[in-house]
Length: 209
Image 1 (tube, helix red, strand yellow):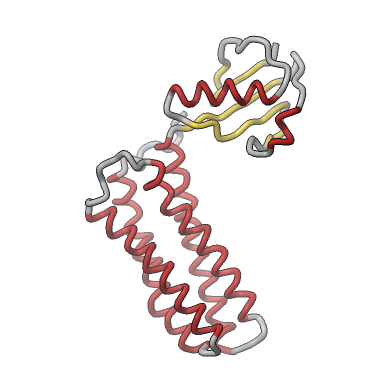
Image 2 (tube, rainbow, N blue to C red):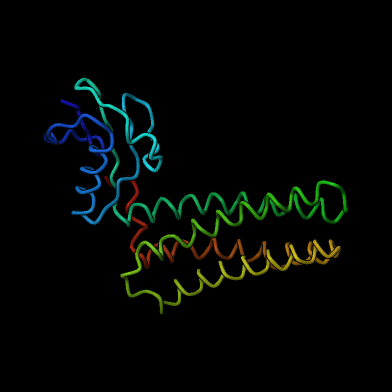
């Protein structure tokens, strides 16, 4: 029978399982009962993309070992916010590179601006994810939460404004927006992320599970 561990702990046998589809269905059912989600799956030390339907047909043998991770919304929110904080530092670096190229109007300006846009999109998704995952909490009127989300809106809007300026040949004006508005807004968001996490009660879940 397949040896299955969840979050490092061996669980009672799940019954006859001869393919990955059946295993995922049973693990997801277990997760849902605990208001959690199946987030990763490793079979015989090989990571499996659980969103790739091609894997679902994969056969399982009795000697296979499975390591699954099931996380609560709190854990996922905490991890998302931590990655967003790391991304914020990367975003500041991208901004400086884009500003340098745009100011000098060299042929790297478009490429560096594209990198900034892609990283900004990922950063905004990660930073806002806790709100969507914890939507049942009554925190939307809290000033710490409001201020943190307002900075995200400002970052998105000002990066868009800088892009429009650059596209219309106003490179130096774009640089002024990036340095004068976007960079301070990112730095303010970093400072607000701690009270934001505290209000969502996701500042103490590191290492949980």
